[in-house]
Length: 141
Image 1 (cartoon, rainbow, N blue to C red):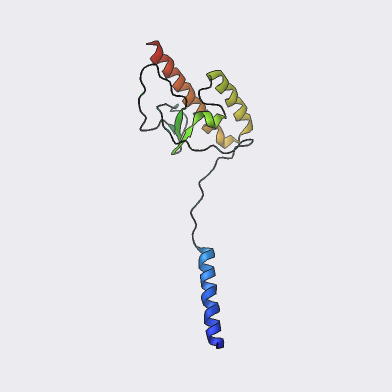
Image 2: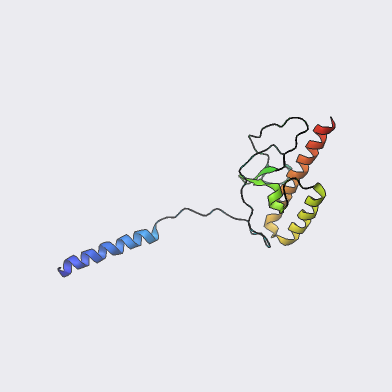
């Protein structure tokens, strides 16, 4: 092999390696910094719930299916900043937990998490609270 051919071969390998190293990779999604627990996972199922409108970024899912009278879903799914979340998972509770247990978990979570994650936790609790209240209203009428 001639030195000129060897130089050409090394140059090609260098540019191939540089291309592989410098190419754009898919960006990782932003995770909330929650102290003391893992980051919440996005929920796959959807059920009707409403979140408190005064909490910035919280809104109910767009395509919920209505339940028949007297039925109460175990999971409460709410949207926050464009992602769907299970409110009970966010608070670290089993699905269908009582409102009192949810309040306790909220207060404990608010002590553990960063200040930036507090509206997220409050949105999860307000989704559970509004779903519980709407269930009581529909059951009572």
